[in-house]
Length: 295
Image 1 (spheres, rainbow, N blue to C red):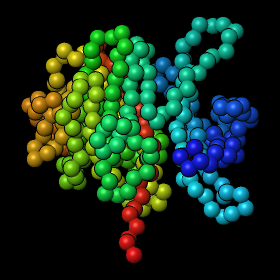
Image 2: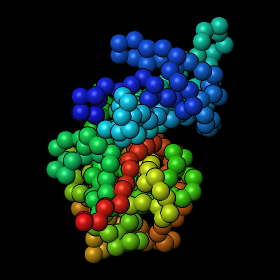
Image 3: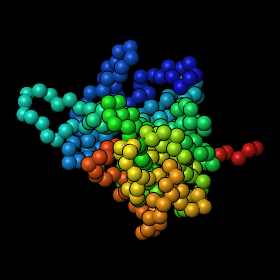
Image 4: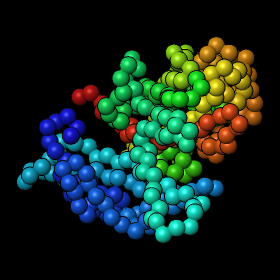
């Protein structure tokens, strides 16, 4: 694991506060009550959602005091539908590794990935330094569906997995307005579209003031509409680059990005779907470090 030839020790992996109860050659097993292991329960109209953190905490190698890997944490969600036919069968949860993808009910595959600088390959590490540019790529795969165009409706960075927790920083809001350039003068932006079902954007790395860990959770609400639909004020990808610019060239739809001000609260993540809109919310975790001074 981690490309250094050292296998992960089973004792270094925990689900919240719970150690593994068993394993085979490729699988680690955890068994607990739903409310155990430090889980967090939220409720939507359709589901009960139990959120856990899969932790990797490396211990010193052998009798030495050193480690050669970094700690890591992955958010895992367990969804239980609230409405079921009455039967004696157990309810089967849907496990979602909240770091990359989400599959909609209509066989649409949404993904949000950290990419290398050239956007040709996924980035193998979630570690960044202040001053780095974080490259994101949102995609939707439609399979047996009509061609779709993807949008990033909103994004919030937070110090905790809950995007509504404090501190938080909304950098995409108001249906696809990337406001980081307005608020901080950064070069953060959407890149020109290369395909309707793919949208790339760049954010300058940031940390929260007085936060020691540097862990950032980025939660983005993605939308997909028919590729033949018009780009409008609810479906757009606008960046502030000496004025508002839209990733597909439809700059006129960005005019309302300034209405009501920018930099609102984290409540912009989410929202209902229209008759021809498909949506998913995905989170990524990363760690932002301060650059060490050169001796």
